[in-house]
Image (cartoon, rainbow, N blue to C red; front, side):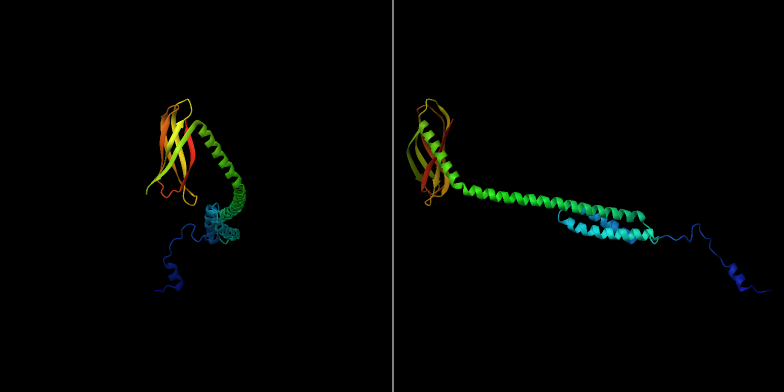
Length: 236
């Protein structure tokens, strides 16, 4: 009996079947394209936000570089993922454009706000300069109103009464018109010893007949009042 040769022994060894397509080399995905796509998405989502879009611009530039490198690798046949690489380049380029546009818009808005603020300061200074003249005009208007009130009404016997909790201005008011007044209110401005206004006192009455006399008591819950002045008489 002859011994089998080594070659014949190898031929008799079991060899598994080769599946269809076995041996085909699959290119790996481009890591640069993936990284560029992720950075592009983040940069695009944050490109509209003030201040934060400065960081978005940096991400977009990095993502654009990664996308271009990944696309070059795909075109050379070293990697796969051409679609991702193109998407990364496009997203990052759009993000850069949006960042530049929004920053220009925000800068213009800040310039307008600063200009408006400067104009407001100038207007305030102009008002301050003319405040003395305005105060004089207001005093004249109050004097005219008081003169008109004196024609319709006569106020007499004004007296200030104080306690620890309130101040009262009492007196009489006569209706000099020939008509009944449905509602009448009198008000006084109150001052402290330094001449500063500390409050107001009010009194009102309904249906004061023509020629009628009203004994009023204008009340304020202010103490420490040193002086008072008639502010207004309103009737209708």
